[in-house]
Amino acid sequence: MAEEIRAEMVANVLSVPVTAGERVEPGTTLVLLESMKMEIPVLCEGGGTVREVHVEPGEVVQEGDLLVVIG
Amino acid sequence: MSAAAAETLERDPRDPQVRFEHFFDPGSVELITEVDRSGMLAAVGTVEGTPVTAFASDATVMGGAMGVDGCRVILTAYERALAEGTPVVGLWHSGGARLPEGVVSLHAVGEVFAIMTRASGRVPQISVVIGPAAGGAAYGPALTDIVILGPEGRVFVTGPDVVRSVTGENVDALRLGGPEPHGRRSGVVHVVAPTTEAAFVEARRLASLLGNQASLDLGSVTDLDLGSLLPDSPKRAYDVHPLIDVLLDSPGVELHPRWAPNVVTMLGRLGGRTVGVVANNPLRLGGCLDSSSAEKAARFVRMCDAFGVPLIVVVDVPGYLPGVGQEWDGVVRRGAKLLHAFAEATVARVTLVTRKAYGGAYIAMNARSLGATRVLAWPGAEVAVMGAVAAVRILHRRRLAEVPEENRALVELELAEEHEKLAGGLARAVEIGVIDEIIEPTQTRSAIAAAIAAAPARRGQHGNIPL
Image (cartoon, rainbow over all chains, first blue to last red; front, side, top):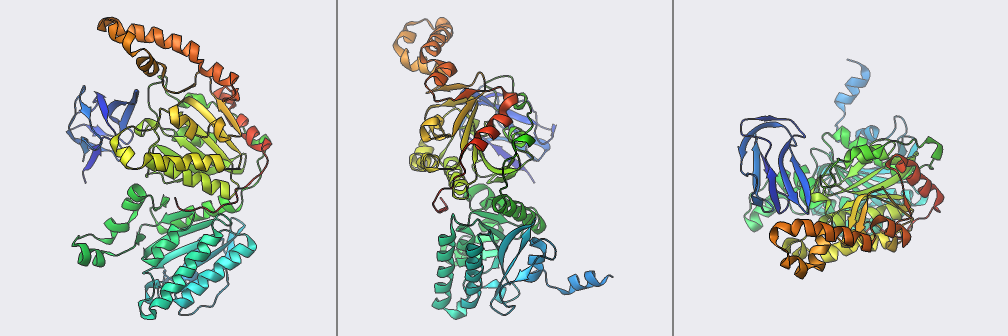
């Protein structure tokens, strides 16, 4: 089942260390966000394969925006 | 096949006596009400040697529906628990009030709610929802201190059929009131268990933590380097769980792990004594407080205070989460609950600032001004209205606007250094007494344990309204 990883808060996208097709383990950093003057890694919960990447560095994401889909 | 296995096969797993045997210590169960058709049964026994009172729905009779006689069983269990001062644990599997009995069953269910409220803050109340807990049976667990949900557990006021006929929404019981919605969205459930057996294990751990708090043995508290669990960069977010796990003797029981995860609330032991931990988790929302997390923490603080459980508050908070959503969500009203909860708490409550405590959130995380027993900080921790750079951007807005853009960052930094000297940083915070002591991260466990041990044992005289 696909797992949709969404932004929890308004943030700048600092980096996206994963690419589509890549295998990721629980705890892997999927996206690095900046918000409240902090660097906040968005971690993979379940593990699987990165199906879709919806953001790139420099973008601003809003709360609820889709970041990555893990399948 | 052994005789015991044959006997287990013959017995319905929904039989409350079978459930009591799973929950209590082996051989300790003693029924305190009759086995009958009331749909409910009560017993006393022990959990890790601690006396506990329990009642269980009998789902083999009318799906565990609650009538006058069944409710009488719950009242008996509560009267016993209040008289003996034991935790009371409800094992729920009930469709709600008994329809054929009509209003008298509603009246009886209301009496159950009333005795739960009278018992609130006096004896710990734990609910294990094994099967459905619908209608009246939903509000039973909801009035108790801690709700544990098994994989088959469903909690809702109106079931899928009623929802469909009234609103036209097609939703099944799982999506309406299963582990996902209640563990993550509603905050109704404190602990989601992967199996029914695991739900009993969690209930036993919590009954023991609250029913047998033990005394703090300072000699058993060894020191470890908690500082190594922080990332090198002060800007980097991190998961606070490993830090709490090391702070406690062993990993505790987290309440509401998936709901409002930017604050962690956990019961565990330090020096053998039960303590409650409230910690910001920078990994989620940067550790900001928001309306849900403030409410979650407030309820936890009030529960701990009511049962005399000392509190450890681990602070690394950038502030309150800004935004229209938060304001409209009542962050002012719901955030005020946390201020109220800490300010009224009479138990020992020790604050540790690991990295930073800014603004209104600094106060809300059990600041000196709210009556903290002791406020500790690690070297390098920041205590301020806001970060220095953010502060000078406001204080020196005009001056900075005149600086050419390419020089602005540098000037900001210079002004920030100057501001820190004036505002005083950590040293000033110690001087004015809002921080009692700067401790090395390696002294954390012993310093917190000593502060708790030195404080008088007190307990708040109030109930634990499900905030």
